[in-house]
Length: 144
Image (tube, rainbow, N blue to C red; front, side, top):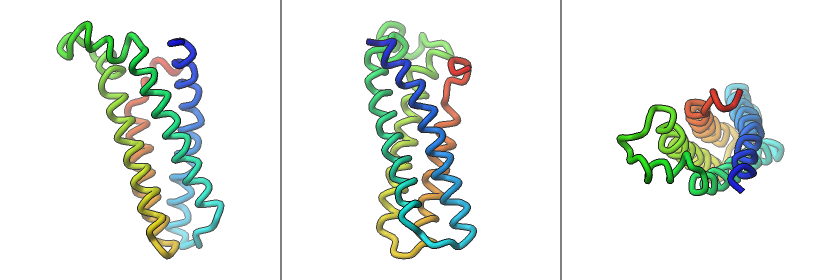
């Protein structure tokens, strides 16, 4: 089961990155271009939100089934983790949760705005922060 969940988490991450980049750049370009908020903008931001939440659920399942997640902390303690183990067991999950929280906040805040400019502003700020956090904690050596 662990191998299937790990593979799913790894491949779903590509979709998450594509959608986050698309939603972030869509919001930034339309914010600075003073464009009107349309149904396609809503769908892009919603789909990015959905795929990040699914990734979080897969990641949490992986965290509790993987020998590199919670089991690693239980076996070695926090002080016994090397930098790569700490990335997988602590930093990657924590920053991933924080990124999903920011993306969710941005999506929620944009719905309360009545005009296009503030809608795009909320999406641009929070989705950009979420994207940067996700990019900062990807275990790149495992990915390539």
